[in-house]
Amino acid sequence: MKDLTRGSVVSHILSMAPPIVVGMITIMICQLVDLYFVSGLGDAAVAGVAAAGNAGFLVNALMQMLGVGTVALIAHAVGRKDRGDANLVFNQSVVLSVLFGLLTLLAGFALARPYMRAIAADEATIEAGTTYFLWFMPALALQFAMQVMGSALRATGIVRPSMLVQALAVIINIALAPVLIMGWGTGHALGVAGAGLASSIAIFIGVLMLLAYFRRLERYVAFHPAQWRPQLRQWKRILNVGLPAGGEFAMIFIFMAAIYYVLRDLGPAAQAGFGIGTRVVGLIQMPALAIALAAGPIAGQNFGAGNGARVRETFVKAALIATAVMIALTILVQLWPGLLLAGFSNDPETMRIAFLFLKMVSLNMVAQGLIFTCSSMFQGLGNTKPVLWSSATRVLTYSLPAIWLSTRPGFRIEYVWYLSNAATTLQAVQSLWLLRREFRKRLVLPPQEEAGQESVASPARVPT
Image 1 (tube, rainbow, N blue to C red):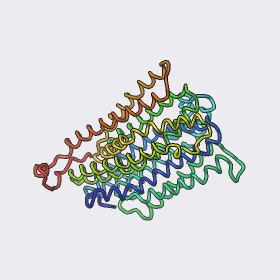
Image 2: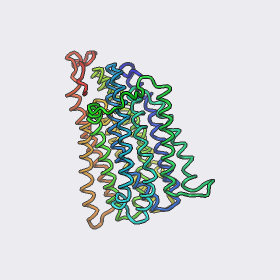
Image 3: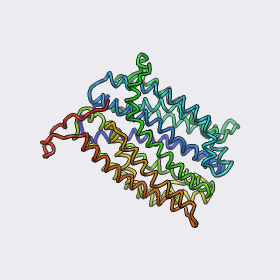
Image 4: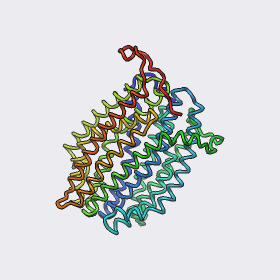
């Protein structure tokens, strides 16, 4: 366990962010490798895999319910020096991860084809997306357990083990992808099914590695079978924090689904170009997201310890670092977009759309970095409802105008990206305003600190 209530906030952020970003980048690279090898199967396969992968946002909503609730409550317990509560939250989160994983499997197998029929441009895309989805479902189900274990470690200030496991799992996935997709060395090419199967095998091995770490090395939180009996009060605690954060990812799913819906009349190349572009943008944004995720446990431990001034300091430092990173990355994208997209498709139209998307959407990366930081701070405070409201605003201000514009004569794909940028900027402004209001409500500073003197903030109310 690492005590984040002491020492330099910037030092904590900068020491935790690199392992987090490495872990996230390896996951994104895994998705990009799948797309790279699938691209040889044609635009329909690329569009199908990309559209099916978008459903991962919906599953991520459930993962966030567990991950955010686990991080917040364990971090608060660590700040209070309450190890017993930290272990109880962890073990109840493990039980929920098993339950959610089983529900994901059942829902995925039942709804894969209806989902693809609702958003895909043609029958070939529907078939490719459905096939990939069915073989990828075990990976999504297993990620619940990986999410809970990684979240528990991050709440205690430990990030390196999760990063190493994720990196090894991705290496396994990358090694399996050409073998299973293209049939390298075996002569049995599975196509898009191989992409899903490679991910499922890799995640299964990753879960086994994390289980081994917890059993042999982790000491602050650990598996206690006696605490596995379902306790509805603890589930309520976890989900009260996690449900709004899960709703945020559900909003991202709706946002992305709306884009796919608007683009479907423009053909598979438009959906394929968008799918490639979103994954490249996601990869580029990982450093800022890692900074935000590092700030969450720091804020959570200090909130649990009643250090209100240090919570505020965490936000300011994280926001400044994330903004600087996003400005640098925006310049990179504007100057060398073709370098980032090289090799993903041989179709000129697909690459033209991906290029246009990257150039235009990268202009809102600073706003996106602020959204990441605000979201992580709300998680650290244990109140994620404001995040849901700001995400819902983004969906409404984008989806309805975009769908309406797509029905008008002269509709152009650029309109989709203009609306996306405007909606993201609005969400950033709203998130900053909501966080400022939350600070005023929950971080009450003593009079002498308000006058500029150093002291410890009065204990903030910790949700239970």
